[in-house]
Image 1 (cartoon, helix red, strand yellow):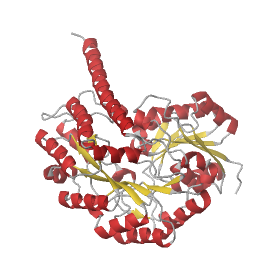
Image 2 (cartoon, one colour):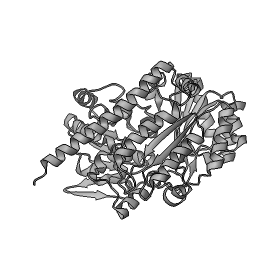
Image 3 (cartoon, one colour):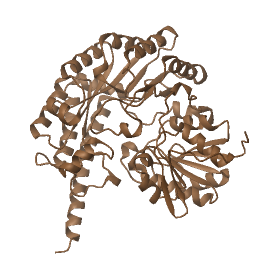
Image 4 (cartoon, one colour):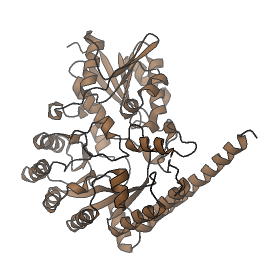
Amino acid sequence: MDKTYKVALCFPNVMWHEVDPNLQCHNVPYTLCLLAATIKDICSVDIIDATMDDLSPDDFTRRIRDGQYDCVGISVLFDIFAEHGHLAVALAKKARPTAVVAMGGIYPTIHPDRAMNNSEADYICLGEGDELLRALILHLSQGTPRPSAGLAYRNGQEIVFQEKAPFVQDLDALPYPAYDLVDFKKYSEHPPRKTIEAPCLVPYAYIITSRGCPQQCCFCQVKHIAGRKFRPRSPRHILDEIAMYKNKYGVRSLIFSDDNIVANKQRAKELFQGMVDEGLAMPWKAQNMAVFHLNEELVDLMAASGCKYISVSIESGSERVLKEIIKKPIDLEQAKQMIQYAKAAGIYVSANFVFGFPGETWDEIRRTLQCAEEIDADYVKLFSAIPLRHTALWDLCEREKAFKDGFDPASLSWHSGQIQSPHFDSRELTLLRAYEWDRINFSTPEKKKKTAAMLEISVEELDEKRKMTRDATLARLAMGDIESESKTASRPN
C-alpha cells in the first residue's frame, strides 16, 4: 500500500470550553490507538491528543498544518464536549483546507444532524469506527467505493445520512491498540485524576473486554451505541493483551472498563484463572460490574487474580422503581450479600444509586438513600437521573412532559437533575446528593480512613475535599438562582 496518504486522529482539548471540572482531564487514548491500529498498514498515522499536550487552538492549528495531513479525524466522546469537537473541526479546516475532516465518537453517533449542521466536517462516522474508518481511508486514498453504511456526508448542498455502521462481530479479529504511536509512558504513569477508580499502581493499562449489553436500563444509551447483543472477546485474546502490556510496557496494574466482564461466568472464570496460571495476576479495578452476575466462586477468583476494586450499580432501593421504571434485574438481598462477600475478600466496593425519575415519589427517593446506607458498601455514589436521547428515560420524559423548565440537551449538567416532578424539585435533589453522599460515605472514622487510603491522601485532605464538594454544590445552586433571576428580569411584562 502507498503510505504517503497522511492521517491524523485527534482528541480536542477539553479545556477549550468550560464544562464540568471533573471531566476536564486527559484520557488514555485507547480508542484512537485502536482505530490507528486498523489503518496503519494502509496509510501514515499520527495521533494528536490536544488535552494531554494542552494544545491551544493555535497550537492545534499549527500541528495540523505542519503535518500536511490528507485526512483529519476528530473523536468526540460526550455531548458535553460537542463544542470542543466543532472547534477542532473548524481549526483543522483552517489549517488544511484541502484535507478531508471527519468526526466520530459517541456524540456524533447520537446527534449526527447537530454534528453535521453545526460543524464543517466532511464526514460524520456513525457507530463503531474500527472497520468503517479503514473502509473510508481506502475510499479516500485508493478510490475504492464509499462505505454503504456508517456515514453522514455532504453531497453538494445536500447532507446524506446513512444507517449506522454494522457492529463488529468478531472482536478477536481486531488488532491491539497501537500504543507505539504515542508516548505510552506519559499516559500509563500519569493517571487522569486521583479518584477511588484510579489505578492501584503505575504503569497501568486500560482494557475493554466486550461490547454491547443485553440489559434494558432506562437511562442507558448503550443499545444505540453498541447494541443489545453481548459481544465478548475470548479469554485468550484478553490474556495475550495483558501479557503484551506487562512484557512490553512494564504494566503493573489494570483497569477493566466494560460493563459486562462477568456476564458470561465461564468466560470470566477462564480469564481470571488464566491470569493466575500465566503469571499475569496483578492489582486491577473494574469500573463497572453487574452485581447480579456475581457469585462466591467468581469473587474468589477475582480476588486471586488481583482485584482490588469494583463498582456495582444498584440504582434504587425501591423494588417498584427498579422493575417498572429502571428495568434492571437487581435483587437487593443478593446485591448486599455479594458486596459483603467481596469486602471480606479484600475488594473495595463502590455502589451507584440514581434517583429523580418521572413517577418516583419522595418516599421512594428516601428509601433509595436508606438502601445506600444499609447495603454497607465501602463507598456510595449518588446520581440524579439524566435523560439522554435514544433512551427509554428520554421517551418517558417526553410522554410525561417531565423535562424541567429550560432543559437544554445540548448543554447537559451532570450535577443537577434535569427532570421535574410534583414529588421533588431539581434543586432539592442537587443538595440532597451532596449532603447524603457526605453523610453516608464518611459516617465513621473507619470508613474515612479506608477511603483516604484508596485515594492515597490523608484523612485531613479527605475532609478538605468533602468541604470543597459541599461548597461547590452551594455555589452551583446560587449560580442557578442568579441565572433564574436574570431570565425572569429579561422577560417582557
